[in-house]
Image (cartoon, rainbow, N blue to C red; front, side):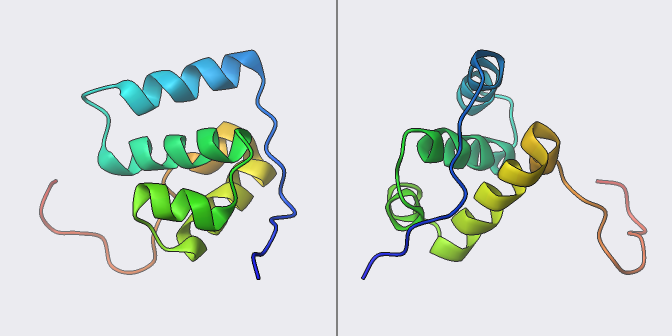
Length: 91
């Protein structure tokens, strides 16, 4: 039985344009591209399971990013600070 997400994604024209550009941008990091694609597919009405199959991701990851975008919009797709000791070497 398929689960239906309670987080319906409706994008404004500006958000959609920005996410499409981010998903196509060659210099974007992999995680930014994947997050943008998750939101775009969710806005097209695909379920978390279908998005996961298309992008080769676990359903739980798709669910996490759908919910964060629903709650915080574009700012929710940004990287959050992580716990632990800061790295000693620069990226």
